[in-house]
Each structure stands twice: as structure tokens, then as C-alpha cells.
Length: 184
Image (cartoon, rainbow, N blue to C red):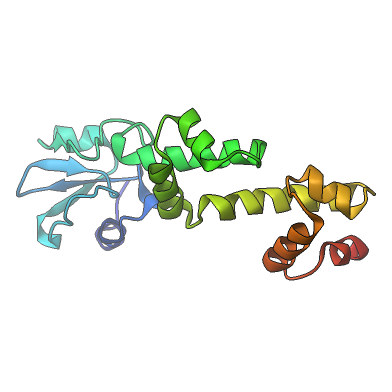
């Protein structure tokens, strides 16, 4: 497969996760090859060569980077740990929106502060925002598929009061829960 040098270098400079595992960059000055998401300083254009596979890079005489571990499949290196943690936390919060952040962090084996940072960096959301989105998603599903009263939907979605449910729903969806039900 022929790689376009300009596109590969742009993806490398941007550390674009969409290109992780699609190509590898060999740095001629250090004889090291990396993934395009490597946190190391971006090399100059004239020092880069691009390869479709890690095997091709090694055959060209490059050794794997110890930071991004390109010889491992994407998702298995330490550089992917934060993304994996955020993903696991989001899944756990989706299943149980009532979990406190400290409890969730303990179940995942990290501190609450580290979990907050990972969620903010990877998803752009705080744990509270993620929890609220999960609760609202469940509420929307109940609003559209059942004829339960709004109070019951609020409590079943994990809200402690109807007032808070209405406020958060209006904030995230731009309309009241009853308006969504009427539109159905």
C-alpha cells in the first residue's frame, strides 16, 4: 500500500487517533519507529519515513519506540491506557448511573482524580456530565417506549427529584420531557 507523505505527516503532527495502526513513522535521525499518536516530540519532515506496517519499519532497520510501543496492537500499549480507562468508566456509568465517582474509581483501580482527568481528556466531559447524559438517554428511551408518568421516569432514570430531572432534561435536550413525549 502506497502512503501519501503529506497526509501521513499532517496526521503525525496532529497526533490524529484515526490513523493509529494505519501507518508507522520511522525517524531517520534516531532509527526509532513510532505510532502517529506517540507523545514524543514531532520530528522534522525531512527525518520521517512512513510504513504501512510495523514489520516494514523493522525490516528497514528501525527499532520500536519505548513510549508508544508500536509493536503492540493499538489499544494494548500504555499510551492507550487513558482512553481505555475512560471507555470502561463510560460503560460502567451507563449500566449504573447512580454510581458515585469514588466508587467507580475504586472499582476501576484508580484514584477519583485520575478518573476525572481521563474522562475530561478523552471524552471532554466531567463524570457528572457523563452521568447526566446517561440518565437522560435512559429517560428518553422510557419517554418514547412507555406511558409511565414523568415522576416515575425521573426516579427510574436515577434522578432524586422531578424538578432536577426537568432542569437537566431541558438543559441537555433544549425542551421539556413532556414536549418530547407529545412529539412522539
